[in-house]
Length: 175
Image (tube, rainbow, N blue to C red; front, side, top):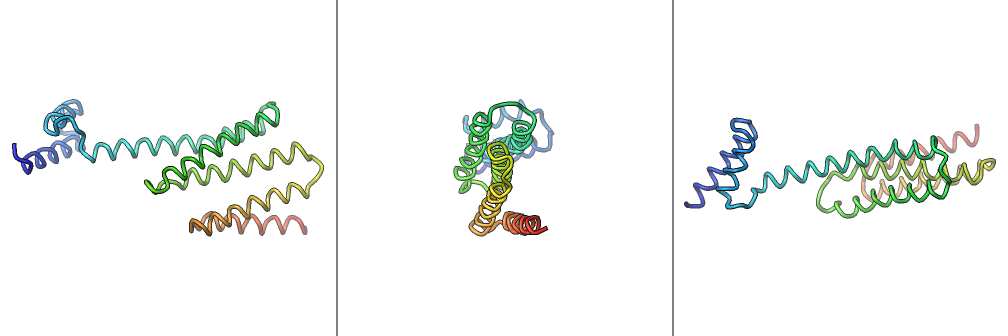
């Protein structure tokens, strides 16, 4: 069969599958038949977006898990720190591995920033419970990291968060 007719049939089958005119099993069978076993790009693209959405859901779930881990468990501070470092490392790996391939890296960036903030505040509060200066230094370092990342990647929300956080820290020190 000539290539032009195959493309027309494949496009029709994809349209039928998308609009649910035929059951998915029939469409998959016919698509495999006409593409000779290889999947069209549209199906691969859809599978990739599902994987990305699931990964982003996992990164969103890391934030409350981290909060539960820090504030509501009696794990040692070293074990909490190791787990939070693993969470942050997973976020950073996802950011750098997929940054050139997809544009959906905002949720891992936000997750890494919030987990780092919670982890550093929890760590400093546990190690130095009576010293507020070290807590302020930790918060300022987080805000500077957010400002730097916002300027480097041109993400306005990081820049605003860092500037607003720094402003609130300065206000809370002098009030």
